[in-house]
Length: 443
Image (cartoon, rainbow, N blue to C red):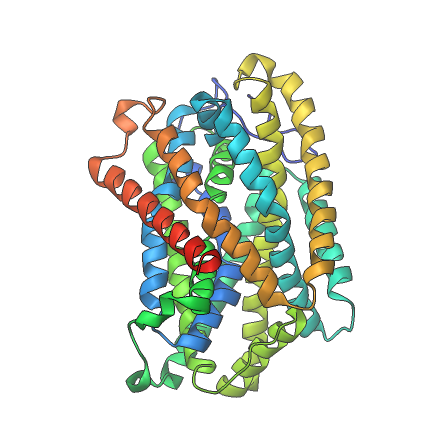
C-alpha cells in the first residue's frame, strides 16, 4: 500500500514504500521510529514493574532485566529490518507465511489489547491525579486521556506523532537519569543481593517474574508497530538505508534498557528495605512513588519525579492508542490481499475507517476493563504483562520466519550470530512460558 503522507486525518497507515520516494543515505532520514518505540516501551514495564522489582527484591532481579532485554532484542529488531529491507510491514510478512499467521496474530492481539491499553492509561491517570491533586475518578481521567490522545492523532499524521514523542522521550530520559544519579548515594550497596535466590522462580514469586519479563522492555507486539512506523517515516522523509534504520532502532532499544536499570535502581534505593507496601490503586501507587522519592531526595525533587513519571506514561499511552488501531487496520487489509501500490487510494479509505473504528473499540473496551480491575492496579498490570509474556515466544517465532523466509534480500539478511540469538530467545521464552503454565495451573 502506498499512502500519501500528506493525508490529514487520521494518521496515514503504512504499507509498502512509495516507488518514487526520494533516496537518501542520511541517518536523520531514518531517525524517529526508534524513539517512538522507546516512548511505547518505557512505561508500565519501567515505572511500575522495574520500580516494584527494585523495591521488593533490591538489585537481585538486575540479571533478569538484562536477560529479558538481550533475549528479546532479535525479535524487536526484525520489525524495522523487515520494513526497511522489503518496503513492507511485518503483517505482509505474516500474510506470506499463510493466512493462519494473520489469524494467530489477530487472536493474540485481541486477547491482550484491552488489558494493555487499560493498564498504561490508568497508571497515567493516577499520575495526573497525584500531580494535579484532583479528586476525579481514575476512569474519568482515563477517558479524558484517551480522548486527548485520539485528538492529537486526529489533528496530525505520523510526523505529528514523531514530533510529540521526541519531546516527551527527551524529557523522560533527562529527568530519569537525573533522578537515578541523585539516588545512587542513598543505596545501601553492601546489603544488596546481586543474584536472585532459587525460590524466586517457584510458586507465587514466579508470577511477578513472568509479569516483569512480559513487558521488559515491552510486549513483542510493538515489533509489528515498529515496522509500520518505519514505513510511515519513509513516506514522510524519504527512503533511508537499512543500516541507518537499524541504528535508529538500536539507539531507542539501548535507551529503553538503560532507563529500565534506572527505575530498578530508583526502586532499590528509595523503597527497598523500608517495609513499604505497594498501593493497590493507580492513584495511590502514583502518589506513593512521588512521595517516597520526595522524602528521600528532598521536597525539591518532587517536580522532577512527577514530570519524569508522567512523561514516561503519557508517551506510552499515546503510542499504544496509535499502535493497536494502526496494526488492526492494516491487518484487516492484509486479510483482503497483499500490499499493492496500485490499490493505494482504495486501501487508504478502507484503512482510515478501520483505524478509527478500532480506536473507538479499543478505548471503550479498555474502560470496561478498568471498571472491573479498578481496585487493584497490581492485579491488572500483572494480568496484562503476563498475557504478553505468554504470547512473546509465538510472535518472536513469526518474526523469525518472516525475516528468514526469503523475503529479505540476501545482503540484508541477519548474520548467523543474530539467527542463533533469535532461536535462543524463542526457546528461552517458550520454555519459561511452559514452566509458568505448569507451575501456575498444574502444581
